[in-house]
Image (cartoon, rainbow, N blue to C red; front, side, top):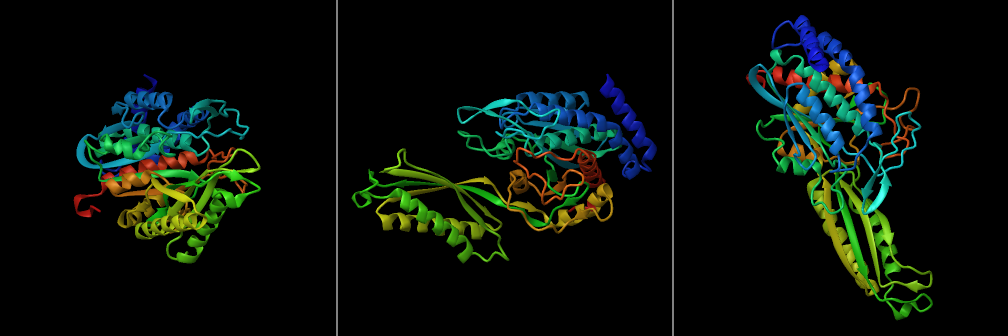
Length: 439
């Protein structure tokens, strides 16, 4: 009942502030967003205290679905295992736009000292691990839930439809799963019936609170996982010539990969990072083992350049192994495609984000970043734009604030209001565009 009353109150706010059904005044949006902020903050803290790993977001999905149903939305659950899709249909037909938030947490031991810090655990790779929202997905869900409440409060003024996508497993497919959350949701119809014309998403990152930044075209890198298995011949550490040394082979492969990146790619045109991050081999200090495994990550911004680097690396690894008398298996698996912001949509979005954040607080030409996001798969299906919200604590240099995935990562809660506003205004202004102004 309380939510229905709140929705009615929001409808009155918009009715008072809107000059006509097709144009909602920014001041009315401000008032409506302010009205939902206590709820948004409470949701964020609740999600933060009860984090869940990818494809295990059952409690999280239940809270979201209950909220969307309470707003009168059409709700589908278990879209991509634990994903939730809410559909808000306006009073009149029109365009269709989608807004997305991710839901999963990470196997991280939180060290923020917050009064609502996580003490939760989960199962990861057969082990019980601490779980925390160390990437800010708790804020993303709360902001999108707030935007849904604001937009539902003005349903009678909407011409068109808003689709709210709450996605699981953004942090990559859990062990044993063939696909992550975005790809699986698309496969199971998250962008069908109704099909959006465009999709928008956001992410909190280190940066001055209150700022928004993104870029057209390649914004966040494609991410590939690389796995290498070496086979040699076990021998005594004192007699390396009587075996095939996979330790020496692995060491040379690391150096070869590092050299490939810096000597075959122009960093001014296609930024590339290729890191070998794990090497596992051996059980005793004086035994050279018969096998070794290595894994790493490749980050790229150009499909052709990525394919060329993979081919070069596979050939180079094979040649190094052959030199030492070993054999090598080389495997690549994509975790996320390139986040490619549609150029026309990016240009259209800049003044909308400025309307939300204020003059001088939006940078639509920020440098690319080598971190990845599986929002990219939505952009492969329909045009989309992904942008970042600066969320560093007040008085802290963004360059020194704890990064995403750190145990100390703690987004500034002031950014919650801005995130709700950017979602709401993006949806509103997109639906208000006439047929002749279609992108």
